[in-house]
Length: 268
Image 1 (cartoon, rainbow, N blue to C red):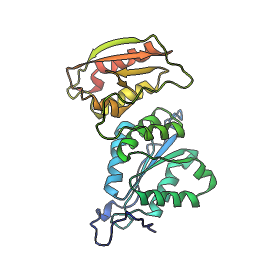
Image 2 (cartoon, rainbow, N blue to C red):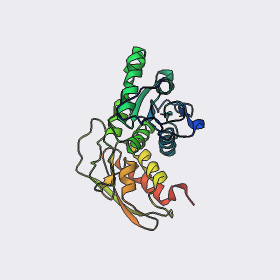
Image 3 (cartoon, rainbow, N blue to C red):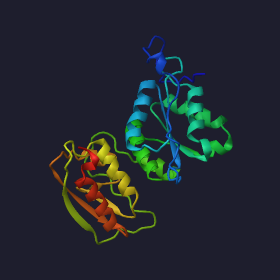
Image 4 (spheres, one colour):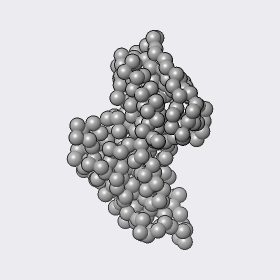
């Protein structure tokens, strides 16, 4: 069934291709063999194409995260479908996973809340609903989930995602859990060897690397754990960046990032 809202399009509003309706799912085994990926994502949109596109984009950043799209009214039009959201939430929480849900407009939130109100108590307790920008939040959440973040950490990543172009560097690096701001830091200058520089895929590579170390790392002053902040730098091939690392694993983190940059992120 469909749940209308104040911002639902009225009759006659053009819809998406009927063949694109229903929850689209990208779930590569739900997690890696070691169980590092613990949180799935559900993207609820009034448009099936928008939901599927956001899943596709996030998938490029986080290949091991269970990503589920619930877009459109279930009949090829714009709106939200209770049944599609219910199926997406069930898939995202399968096997005991937690899940974070991102929505685009008000009635998508109402539909999601209705699903959770009627869900099993165990399932509802494992789901977080983010108050976050839809696309930027999905990317930030996916990268944090890829690095093994908990549901609350993935939620925080989504809700702290910068909106629009903003001012580069306004998001402060996040300290590892239990750490204090260290005074000493290591620095290296490295030149990007891939032609396109810090576009989406290389930025995701760096962000995932940072997530594997107990260290605070910046690239040209921005948080290296944030794909969006790295992409905002607009650094292209042949340009140099300054990488700074501090914390217990600063040396290992710095060496890993420098190696990734000097290896052109595996790009020709």
